Image (cartoon, rainbow, N blue to C red):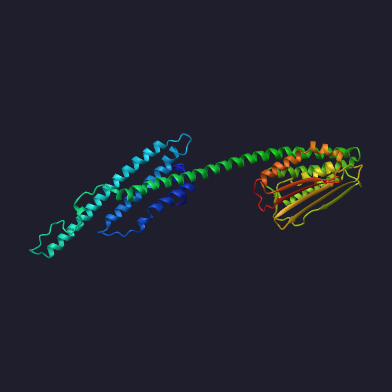
Length: 388
């Protein structure tokens, strides 16, 4: 059955859900026929119902598949043409139903007459001078004109069916258009996110290389160790960047630890570093390199080797629903200008968050005379395969 529906949908260029809707609506239109009880005496009523149901089905299918899309849903609307076509269709179907009902009525009356003659033949009476039409309604031997009852019982349901078809097809078209718009927005978001991630990778690399460069004159051995650590980190970064899938929180924290160890190589006893990371991170996923941006900013702008500095990193999972990353570092007023000039990482982070967590995250950055605090709150995702 599914294969048949798919083949029909491809042949007439209609999606599977829409085709199923059409079939269900046709079933709804013809369902009254299932309640009919066929017998020889009442067959004319069944024929009338059958002709009306199939006329409505014909109107529905023709309007749904052809006339509504071509005359009402495109930019160059042809309302007059649509009204004219449906007027002709309803007229033709009304004439068809009228003649079908006439034939059914004649058949019914003929059967009644034969039945009456059989009764008279079996029980003859000399005094009977009953006309063959006696006992039958006055209109039994006349062709009834098309009256107001015919219009109410046959034409109005067809007009209602046309209006219902317009509404159903319009809603279906709006839904299809929204689906296409969502797909386009998704494609645009993926392209923008891909571009942002490509920008961030060299940004992260250059900043880390600058940190290693500062170590060369101080300690060549430490510089070698830093280069090895950086190589391992970049290998992980390249692996994470292969797809748009998010990475386990445990992997992001492991990468963050490597980065912190790398930054510690260029610090001295003037730095007060405190780190608090969650231990249970199973089944939690986040975009790659999300927290490193905040930590990188803290080391870059909040640490001066010749002055007392501090960096406090705290990442917690709250109620199994949100992840909070708070990074606090020293604030030096004379480095405010430098921070503003090098804020590309934060700006790119905000753009990524807007795409991955639209209206679901909070990113705040505040400072006073002594400290600078960046706080990121994001909802927990438990699936790997979502846009990130």
